[in-house]
Image (cartoon, rainbow, N blue to C red; front, side):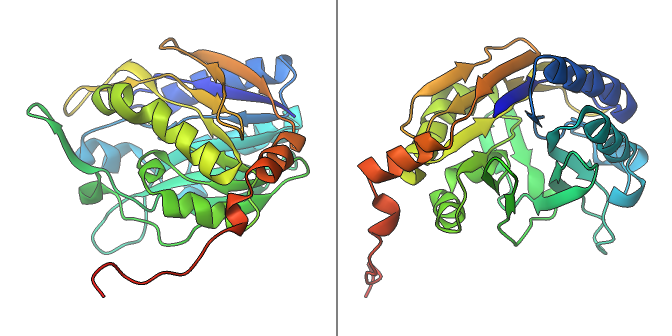
Length: 278
């Protein structure tokens, strides 16, 4: 399957981001991609909860989702919106960070809300408290397509290996990890974590990323690492998009999944063990 990873520098205005996203999806389709993936928070990169409340929508009213559903149908492709920042009906007013898989019929085939929240002090000047604005999901999600069974995740999830093992044990052949990674943690951990998840599970790992300095109208400035990656089931890097926005193509062959798992059938070797404190 010809696949395209979109590397973007989304700002905090959803309609402006939508125009860029649509152009890149068209470019991917023109390049022959049948499966296209966008990064985390495709519709709005923002550090201001006030701004997010002003510009975000509930899923049913979200223009980015509605438009990209029409585009996927017109272009006859599978489209993973890496994630959308969406309003919810939660009493505390927190948003959802939701990955959405759209089919060539224009329908939503799967939804996944990011489970693990990035509450981290990266440095003295860089602190994130994602859980203050976003509520965590509680359900792992796999989705079937004609070319592969997908296991969905988002960004900080990549540090929690048990999630990916559960997805692989549930039949996932391709793991999706759309991200907006910090430059500090990205330089230190991004590649090695993605390669580890591929090697541990014998899956392809597809990680489209946000990159560069984001245009922010309110709140603190935001910068992301880039380096969208595609990793083979044996752990090889198939492509690295660097730090410029753009479309990167990679071809997937599910036979590589079968071969990797045959060579090291680790998914068949789980054993129960006692708690270390017992």
